[in-house]
Image 1 (cartoon, rainbow, N blue to C red):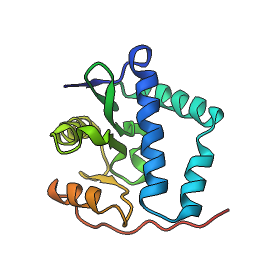
Image 2: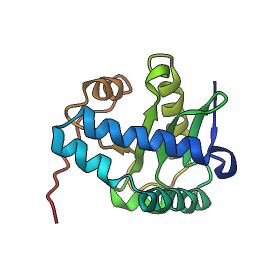
Image 3: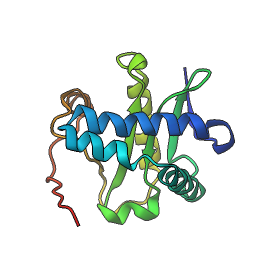
Image 4: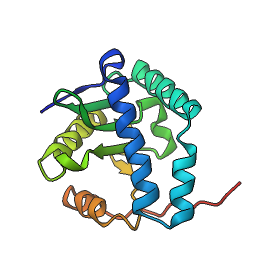
Length: 161
């Protein structure tokens, strides 16, 4: 297993496969049928194109902001927002962390977190902190982040537009 910076030419399809699985897991694993349908419904070709273009823009601004874990194919990734977006939360922001279920419990997620910390330590941040959003219903992820020293800090709320 290798953890390395995302290479668009080499990793694009693998990253998208992981991103798609990440989104489907959010929909089906942490909510009701309406949430599942909402997450499934957004995964259009247009969304894929927009997401991958955004990844490319972020990587252009911070080449190490997306780290992939790969064997022959991408099996996980961590996406730390580039430094210029740190003012969103006055911190480094882990936008997404995903590991294929087959590789969970093998240390891959720990390796990806270490890569995220390394990226964050290089950023000039208003507050010396790294933050992420985790669904309250995702007990496995919450336990993982607690093991990594993350503590509750505020709460995100949302409403439809």
